[in-house]
Length: 415
Image (cartoon, rainbow, N blue to C red; front, top):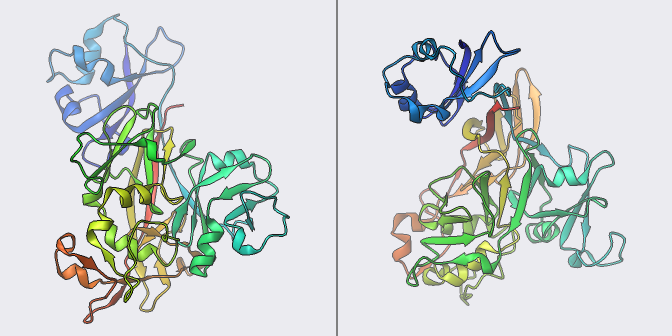
């Protein structure tokens, strides 16, 4: 006879997080209403050790949903359950942020077509090379995302020389800034970086516009991964409003739920967007045609930037939440009352590389570019306009942006 030892459940009402639950007196109806997955740890005098049971394996056979779990076990007698010797445990882990310079990396401009020591002018060294003597570069590549001046860039490695940040130096020259951040997912799972290419795009019907829904087929099964998407340098994790699986191999990006115009203006000073198919206005280089930005050609070009790519993580138990930090009364400083260890998000969704200093149980987070523009086009229906510019609301042109730690975590270890 089985006896309940403990149980954990993945709540439907708490951001899909795991927690310990009192399963014994709970009916199966309550389990179904409140949890997507429940693991029960059971003992049995005929077994050498405890075993675990995923209740999803028995729920289809339950005929009395108002029976408690303890009553169910008592009625089993000597009937065997589909148990496992692997015992899931609660163990919260996070993706963690580090400033690249503070973490001790040597960061060197490099050309993708020449060696590190090649005597080339800096203008021809578009990429950055990250090196550190005690780092396994293959592990870094399979564990980390890298941001440059607030925007994530695609990375690569040959496993020996270091880690390349594609167009990282190009972004530094463009912005005249040199901040670099590293977000490590090592405690959560292994990453697979996939560049987005033109042959991945498809439409469900010919009249469909990518500016509404852009479909991408990756030619591989995505169902056992959490799919993260970087769009123009902005990271989307478990953002079902913007990115959704639409098949085993495909995702859909809903541009109706993405602040495309704001992000274009916010990112333009930091990454090179000159290759996007927008006609330059002779009297205002910051103006653009709304129709051109909503065209298929623009969306395809935007999604094939080196700052747009897909990252798969082999863990389907992730969750996200936001922890607000306090903005100082002047720019470029936030205050945290919890130890900073996660990426910081500000503006229209960009990541803000920060340097933290502790004092009296609180942390000062020094960063840059904390002012968020309040665009004049917010006062109109932007998509209905012919032309938009970066003109700001004269009554309130800028605010110090709210900022949040983005916590990407996992509560369960399934062994």
